[in-house]
Length: 431
Image (tube, rainbow, N blue to C red):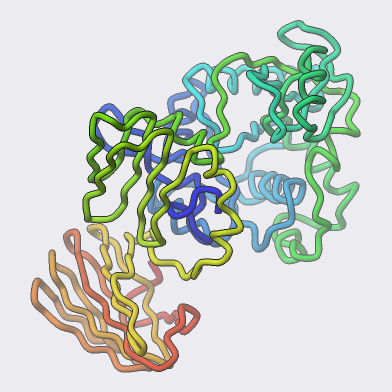
């Protein structure tokens, strides 16, 4: 909610595209970190641990071939890391003496960070410690991070203590005494975490753990493992590390004043605009402000005040108005009393799941591109101007032969996103 209206209940901040690449296109936090990891000389095997609701977005932004370990529900970082470790070992067949490096996808970092990840993995592989943590040199007394108190100021040292997120004054004292931010970046051999997991959880392997996942205790990896481990090394990292969790910090990392159609006059100062709508935004005489517009809503705020947005977002209609899926994306363009109108974009070669609805009719109108529809097992080609009617109960899907834009009108008294039954058949498997 802190980055509303660009983020919503199914699109978290990691997927907001605001970072301009050299080719002029924009990329998200997850795309930026994933690209950095793929450049590593060690040829790292990358697996993303995530919740069910994020999988389609990940496939949309990184491709359908990316390795994903899906948490069936949220149980905090210890269960998530154990599940991912079991997935690597049991599903991907990675040996227990191989090293895993865990890192978040949302900090703003540069190339030296990825070099540091390789060094972190090498330290873990050397076996001098069971856990090797990255300790980030603080740039200010943050209240958002836990702190590591190292035993010395060498590039690699032991860990004397771990401190929870403090107030600003306490953080200043920690920093004076050489404390480092704990950014949740660490490395270990798979066998170590699997051994710890079996001490704390009764499970046979990945499949068994997945089935029991909802019953697991909600506990952080720091509490369950890190703070109880005596054989720990801390590797200092002094490069750039920014948490882009608020509009204030996010705009600091933007390479330009606006993304999307916007104009700022010469009297604007320290103003940033992110516009995902197809209408222009004009700003005049604003100072220290952020303006953001998406199908979810419009925000106009002083940058400092933007950090207090959460209670106001909680009062808004939280219906998802825009989403990226593995096959493309959709945007709600009109909400009527008994209708919902959506613009759907499918990528070439992609298709929706073969599905039906019990409480609504649908009408598709093709406005761009060519595709193929399957209605109750019967397939036909469609192009610009074609209209497809699907009464409630009929099974249907659409496949894009080229990039395909479709206006979908849903008609019914009880239109609900949960009114969807996936099917097999009609010569189509699930996308």
